[in-house]
Image (cartoon, rainbow, N blue to C red; front, side):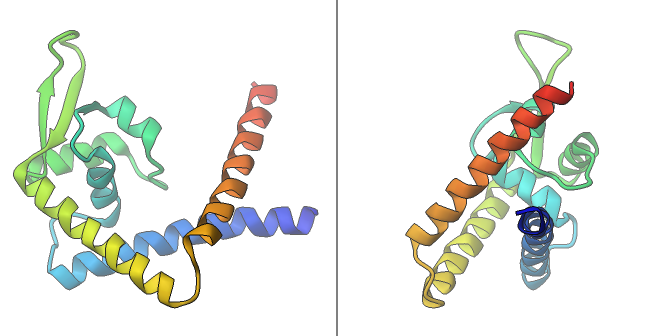
Length: 150
């Protein structure tokens, strides 16, 4: 069990890195140079919502990245609009600009294309659902482990 557990944890990390590579390759194919793969993922995860940086951090998994820095760069490059919260003037909220929505549509098309191509390999939605359930159970296990450590 220990060897499989170690293999699974390593595979999760490698898969995330490979997924970021896929996003980077798509950005390169589209000729988009003012944004990186992690920033594109942040935009996709914001979608049509307005979020604080803290909420964004809780929702996403941005391996080795500084979300505040990436949000600042996304604002500077015109992908995000940053506004003070009307309820708490200390908090900043972000939402997609038109340029951000255009990029999210392109990333969504990548997801659509990838899903079609994945289906052609013989994997079906039920296979992914089973894998997702196992990963959710592992996430819950790690969350419980953290509660005992603290």
